[in-house]
Length: 418
Image (tube, rainbow, N blue to C red; front, side):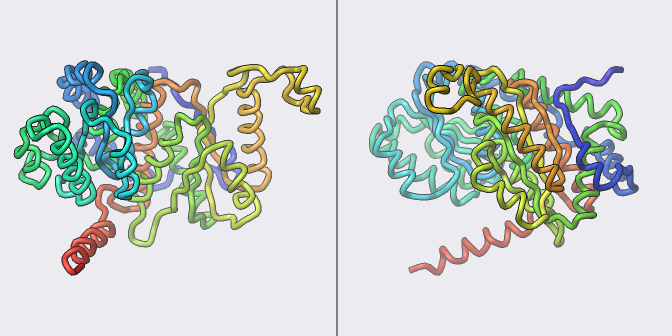
């Protein structure tokens, strides 16, 4: 069967630091993936889509009744949705606000300008015990109750949490809010292609069936022959290069503003999954061309401790043309008759070349278009890469023991504050 190509992965530059070797650890990682994938709910893409589509009526209601959606959630309960909601076709009619931090000044500013009568709150916490999310939810409920009355709370709040006793579940029950089950078998940072990421996207008018179609296509393509798939080779080359050059950071640079949240989503996925037992590389998310003017100097002339992944998109001839008459008048002939997309394409090409010229190990993932299918496929690729890398490293990509230490201490400090 012919392989379906949705994303072009170029690892030629990494091969200059050593040829690809299908090592024993990589072989074991692929074998472990093949053995486990069918049992992992995050890969039950069609079933996960069906669970969300069962609430399709909410999308119509949201479009009719609300001008704003507020998503209360942090980490994996928010980042995947932020990526997918950038695909929205309704953003001119419905605004979505992601409060994934607990800065009280940000929320205070929102209350000052919000219209609570047309605002829907979507509260997401897998455990139902996340203190940041619970704090935001209680404050928001109090605000709505004060402005609209207690009877209106259930009309303005939807909760997503595991089907078990928890503070968030109790909150939903107290006010009669719709409470949707979060799949117990899907961790937050792996939940983007499940209800957690898909429900907010659906409410924002994103064609989530197309997102899942793209993710499923890439997933099925990988499973055809994972041993020889470009994703496996890419994982092997990245790990080999990291070990050979003793790299400590991985820079993930996206071009196109629409993909900016993808870098923040990847940062959590990579860091929480792989940063264990003294291992892992620190993910650094960057945006081209912005960070070419703020970080490229360090990348090129600073410590050689980074591996680079650039997500590119051929934008030449996209956008308005630059006036030839004005360009010539001000001495800016390079852009005469060109478009902004032409400049973006040139900047991408130049940055890639200068990284290579300075022996900065670089791989390129080229997107042929920014579509729900391609974004879904790219997210699936990054999830598979993370799982395979964890297998090569010999770490459990699903736990986060160090994070739990901070949560325990935070609760302790709250108890002893005056």
